Length: 172
Image 1 (spheres, rainbow, N blue to C red):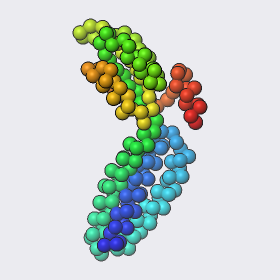
Image 2 (spheres, one colour):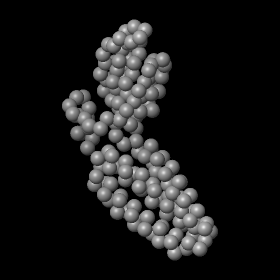
Image 3 (cartoon, helix red, strand yellow):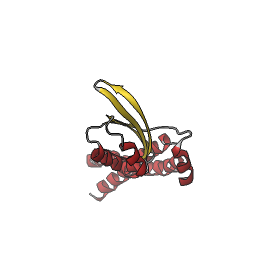
Image 4 (cartoon, one colour):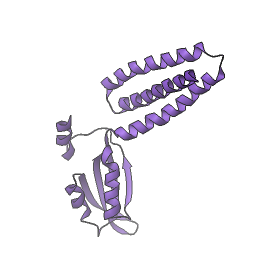
């Protein structure tokens, strides 16, 4: 039983590290991803070696598989907790909601807005930039200010110029 728990634990750590390493690569954090890769492969080889030496017990292989699945879940939860990067949220509201950009700016969000024509008339479009760790807070603010807003979010890959560049260089 002890060996099964060790195998499962090693695989949870390995797959969590793998998940985080891939996210760091995507986010452009190559140095951290490289270091994590070295730790990850050590953990992987240790776990694989234990399983291959003990193949006579099918529960060891089952523990390896179960640990792999739990590692995916654990890694995704860790990434969600870290919330690295930024999110761009596009918000569409009725034109009567014109105080929303000012309120969002007062809360520290970068907001660009423009008028647009929708199926049922004029709309106010806003593009709001926020840190991913503040995304839920932004949605809560939007729910209070304009519960009927149409909201789309996506993660920007690059920044160049604008309001956020000064903030980003100060934080790094």
